Length: 547
Image 1 (cartoon, one colour):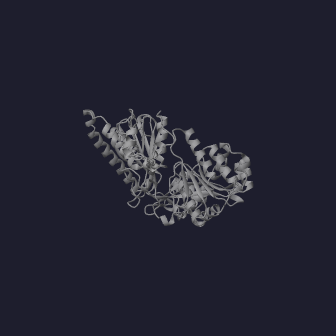
Image 2 (cartoon, helix red, strand yellow):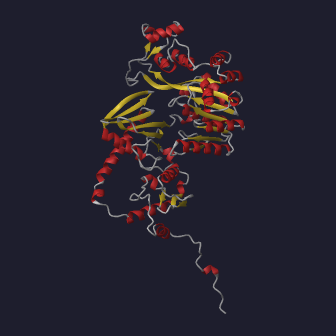
């Protein structure tokens, strides 16, 4: 009997399929690529380079983009729009994703005359993308913090917020504004798949550092880490776009330097004591745009440097704004509503506590569930840093109590280690500043003398008329002014009981604390900020601060 052929001669059943076989399988039985340009749910150009969704629910993702936030954002939106999306996705080589769209383009019907005429529209879109980048470039050149684009019924205004002040930079017609806003949305890297003019939408444009070489064609200026975009419908108009500019550090070697922000040596030393705390919660408070994230980032960089990068620092942010070398920064991607965002943030916080942290940084405590997890981290032996929207350092306790945090946690000085409240004040231009001693009839100077006598008249200044050096604004840059509170049991007990005045008097007396107004007046007497700027943020000079 002839010998049986060896099994190795047979074709193995588990042999990998060729790309042509996979493509034939994907496009079989009328199955369509929904994300192709001609599909029912077309993805943006940069998103198409990393994923493909088919009408039968098969979801293919490039193996190079497994953890890209744009993939997660796209999947969330696709489910929201009612499309079937298989979970988990199939991870495939990047060249297969490209082959899928090449095949979809061949199968697409020939364009109609109307579609062929769309080339003019494409040219208009390219021009608007150029206008969009030109505005970003102009804003980045003068370190604008926010760009406001207001599309009204007849005209569009582009407004820059520089040094805390709003100034109209350009005016265009309504059509230009609507096209500009659409171009900004289309150029973003993380956003909903489709632009909806009557909905509130958020998006993000990433800089080269965040994109790590995977970004689209539109590149941000080199000193810009990213841009956060918020699209809003408005009454008596069509659209209101606000773009928050996120800048890289001018001097990376001094990335942890708090004094460069405007903090004094005394305040920098207090931050050093807070960074040395191994267990407990430190909160940085202030309104939107007060520099909380920057202060937090610099403290985290300093902490890692001071401990020779020998601790595990985990951050949970929505979204990460600034890189912190040496930290594990966990993003919370855009969710479709506040409830989903809260659930995602809570899930990320819980995951961080299970990831062997030494120190936690929470981007913002905005809900009771986030606050409870922050306290859980402190109670379980970790240091926790975070931000909160509160009017003052003492108000942090009241804000947490109002959220629903139990009083026994708030009165424990082993948990509540420090509260910081800060604002960004405009630095007075030294070249055109007006000396207070030369304007004794000015109402602000009269209040200054009423509060402090003639002390400080030699150095205190009023905002000048503007000059070439400050571009006619009277201010030149900004500096942070903050009150730092290191509480003890007596202070916390008085505050939680509602005896606010006694608590403040105890803090400024027995504990040697300094209020925001005290810190601002110190800078005013050094000629760093104007008398008007102190009154803008802290109330009239001859009035006692009210908490």
